[in-house]
Length: 286
Image 1 (cartoon, rainbow, N blue to C red):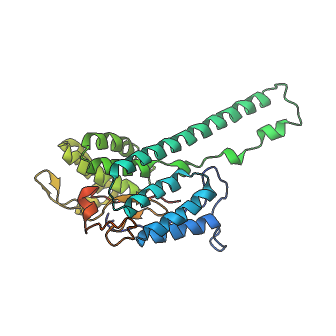
Image 2 (image 1 turned 90 degrees about the vertical axis):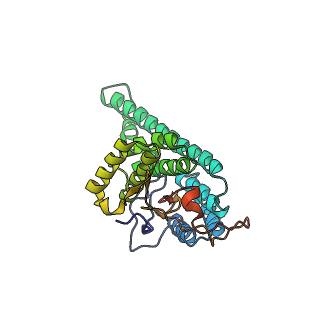
Image 3 (image 1 turned 135 degrees about the vertical axis):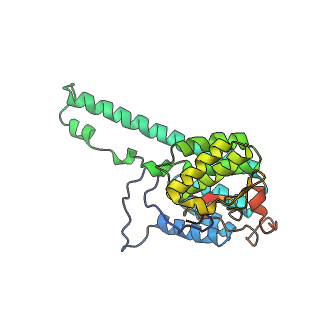
């Protein structure tokens, strides 16, 4: 797999806390699905202002969905010519915290429900007419694992830290992802490994770099992507990726030059590749 190749757009059908179930491929798209697909197309067409308008409409339907908030932040960053990585970093950290808070709240609700069910089934003084209601599953409280998956936002945080030359911080952010990489989407996992390789080299951690290369070769057959290391840096093995934007499809963000920069900022070719990342910001699947 070539890390520079964009991934096909994909849209999940279940919003945070939702229970819509799998999409019917033969049926019409829901409004949220339609908006998500439209936003992805606009984003990858570099029509960032229009994309933000669609994402804001989607946000109204999905109730402050962290993934939508994430994509808005990333799209605004590109719209503004990638001029303020510190601001984007702050927003992404807030999105990550919101996702974690939502998961924590959901787990607490599930634990409370489990305790009630245990009491009800162990002969407590619960009225028999209420018991079936207590035991019935509350699908509104179910949080699907991928609804609040933070792997993409964490990867993007690490991308920004890398290009701010905060290598030690980037390493500390990436390490937990790498240690628990198996559940992560394959394309995102590959980007985690490639960025971690760059970070390890920047930190002069040869042991970590060798470990990542070994994992890449084993898991992705990716030895061909790792070019010769010269003077402590990877020889442009993914230098044209730009930032990874997490949005309605896990794909590489197009070069921001030529975008509808509403602020009037022209982003020169390859501006992203050394100012923010050799990896693209990842646009999150909604």
